[in-house]
Length: 315
Image 1 (tube, rainbow, N blue to C red):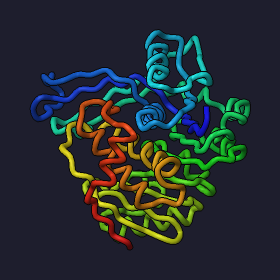
Image 2 (tube, rainbow, N blue to C red):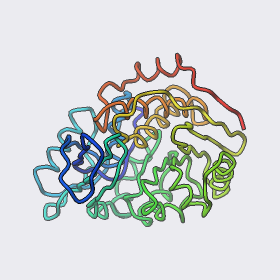
Image 3 (cartoon, rainbow, N blue to C red):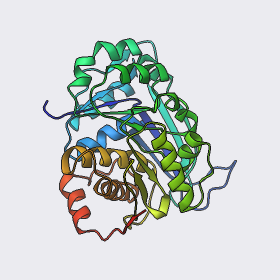
């Protein structure tokens, strides 16, 4: 497999519900319930496949039917799953979420302890696979020790999705030498210890993360778009307009698009093109109930990027 990306982290079964009207706590709410395959790393890998990027996916699953069905689905969209870890006496990961009726997440519960089976020893055992990649993408469902082991052996640029404030602590000791990170506002607040409310706050937080040794930072600003920075440049790229149906998976698709832009349509130094790609693919994701929008493709995303009027502000 030429020019592939390695993605390491969680794969799980997503069960989600969205009420038809305003969510009423502690009550039964009529609405829509869906079952999909998720997990931050799996979502990233899925979106990379949709964008035409060859992927080798590394995760852990249990000895259950749902986990095996999920892996077969991953294979059906083009993922190489030959390095997936199988633990027969454990249960595959699951993620349960409830949305507000506007599509924003209200609350979620995850069961992802099986990710602890992605150990430093296993990472070392597949170092040839990792070092054959053009990029390595991780989520923070893997442990700090596993991330540290990966950094020690990895020759490819490492991209990090912090996943959540609870899991961002795992990457904080390992930021020095990371190529690219894409936190949201809350994750960036945790990583920096800052309160982020204004544009100036976003700028300060981006600079603080760069000072920790990260080469590039892309930070989602909600409806304001994306702030992107390296040591030499900083930009805000406005959002790509769309009607929001469900926000689940938006951040995962954004980092997949950053990897795609940085390895396929631009280069590793791209800030503006990568931000436009992230905004476009995230907008395509939130426009549907699907965690991974099947309409995403290299051609569709690229055409939206080159034909868009997203505002670019150099800071």
